[in-house]
Image (cartoon, rainbow, N blue to C red; front, side, top):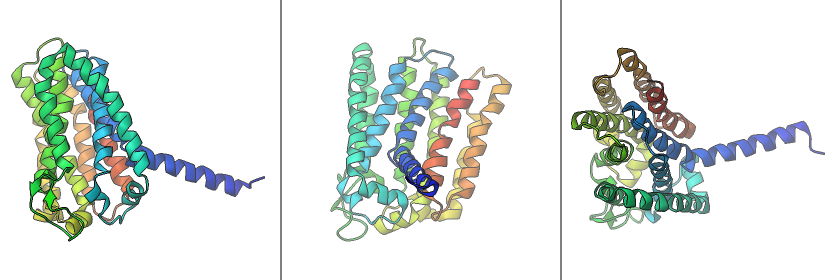
Length: 300
């Protein structure tokens, strides 16, 4: 009969494996994407069909896990717990990606049959998301034998975070705005798109700070490698200062104060970001912070 020590060890190992799968398999991130989409309807005081949030969550799960399977990225050295997990769990990544595709495909078809105009938003966003990781641009960068002769859009200097923020803003704000029963005024839509863009762009800088050693070795010219870590943090703070001014018209004053909570949490996250921090700090706290706007907007 196993001792209490062995039982505790087995329980800890199982919990750690479950947590790694939840975080590094992008399940928490997909949940955050779905919640942000749902929260857009809440902020606009309209009921959003559940299929929209489910589509964004499933698409996020598919895209991020397929990204972990790109050959040139798997050839890069795994120097962190997350990197080692991604390297040693290709079947899990593939399974989660396929689950995302299987979930997203019928939902996307249903929405396109209901509102064909959505194709003009979903198509370019899908192309952008794909070109983010797939090498299509001429020119090699980084270590010989690691980065391919062609490079993806993420290797264009400082473009990595902008692409991510644009796709997330389009999916979590633009898509629900097109589906809501009452048309969203262009001024309100512009404010919400810009707000979400700045929010996601700030968090991409946090992840860029995490990836400094890996991006330096791979030759990916991210913002921290161009500006330095200290200036990158100041840039993140500057982006966050714009969020309190980007509120939809007619929002009660008390609600605007509530929406400051995610901003302050993101500022604290930026302050503590550095390359040597645990992967749980980023995949847990940073992805978890993505849930805060949804919670705040639900309470508004």
